Image 1 (cartoon, rainbow, N blue to C red):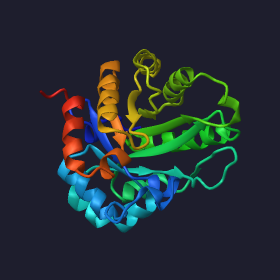
Image 2: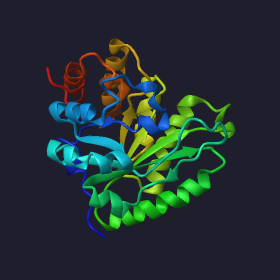
Image 3: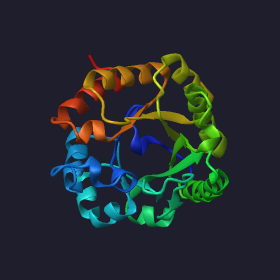
Amino acid sequence: MKPISLSKITTRGKALFLAYDQGLEHGPSDFDDKNVDPKYIIEIAKKGKYNGIVFQKGIAEKYNQEIKASKVPLIVKLNGKTNLFKGEPIARQLCTVDEAIKLGAKAVGYTIYIGSDSEDESFQEFQNIQREAHEKGLPVIAWIYPRGKSVEKKKPEELMAYAARTALEIGADIVKIQYTGKFKDLKWAVKSAGKTKVVIAGGTKKGEKELLIQIREAMDAGCIGLAIGRNVWQHSKPLEITKRIKEIVWKKK
């Protein structure tokens, strides 16, 4: 097994990832005439000097030349689903670790919906991915979201900490979780993750003030950064909001 280092997808221990896997997860409804083009997203990541850009397999393949030219570290999402099916969620593997490495990936990602009927299948699939990726020195990022009928009556703050702890227990190097909005609960979730690093999701489109407050709270709680998509590439001035986010993540005055 090769040693796992996060240095290729972090800067001074902090990270800002530009997420663009929404085309599969949400359909084209999130896009406009500009951001529907992956080249526009790659350009934002390049000029904004992001630590990583998250793509599904298809975009990573078809825009590989542009991604490599940008020199932004590629993070390939290995599984996914649409939002059309309304049953218990599960995202199946669509790309292998070897395929991701051939595409130039510096890390791989995988989504698990804890609490769903298919949780155990996702765990088994993740373990095979994590084992193979670590044998080849590749970090693994787990997207962990509590979903399904089993969690409907559970408290969001408890589920957030459970998601973070799950990532530690299954061997993820970084976990992406959704911030429920209370600082003390996020601080506990980060502590629950132990040595697994935590990034928060940018989440649904929100006001700039609210977004920046959440990012500040995340950094104060001990997160290493965030994986953000719509709140950047749907913004009228994506590089300006990127600059403001980076000032908080790296605590620049």
